[in-house]
Image 1 (cartoon, rainbow, N blue to C red):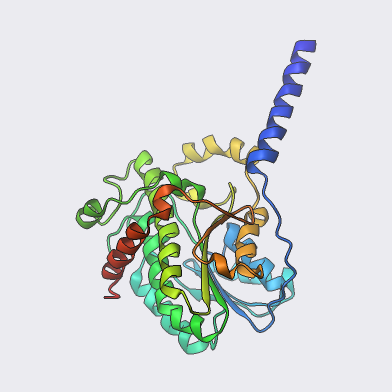
Image 2 (image 1 turned 30 degrees about the vertical axis):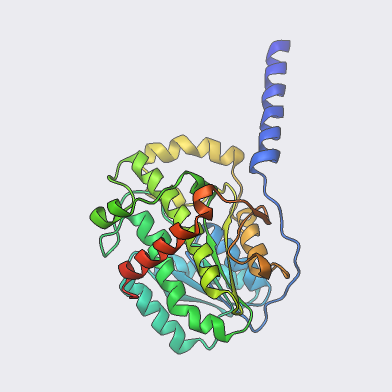
Length: 318
């Protein structure tokens, strides 16, 4: 009996050590208000995006929920308005898996919204599939869609004085790579749609997020726009909704025990969006509300520049 008690106590202790030292997040501390400011949050109908939108709405911002699914987004708008008491929360259609939709969103936004202070590239997918233009889903949605969106809105960001662009990356960028010949032949950074390749595609897309932010900062140097990439923490969200049922069931017990909830997962995003004095850190990568070192590939300026130039061609900006 005593051995069983010791085993349970040891397991609980191990859980607490791992949770508090590896998975538990840090809360931001800024009290900045956002009345008169406009924010776009992509993928804001669920998970980290919805939590981020809610907390920004509570600070008085006009928040644009840029989402693909109209029904879910309208429910999110209702929830956020009710909880925040802020009626300046609206939905605008955006499907990052369609470059045509990105253009349409940007055109509508620029016609109807006079300012943009913060752009949060939050939406992300992990799993099989292709975009409307035939790109692998992770590369097309997580990187190309946000790359095009940011470029189409840059002028409006620059007109608003001190504005920011945030791109939600991930610690998994360290396992990413970019194979340009494969991209040219397959329209993707992986060679197949297997479970392993889907995971690798996600890692690759997160490396793209980090490199995009680095090059964007280089190009915006000397302007009033700053940008940051970030790791939100290990968060239990709907990111894996495209996984098979057995894969989701396999990960669920681990997720419930260890992973952060979306509100905690939004803290580093809020830090990068609101914290005063981080402007000199434009282009850097944050985690747990603090600047962190990225992997070696994420610090490669030549790779970042090449990815930018290739992305310009793929999205038709050139």
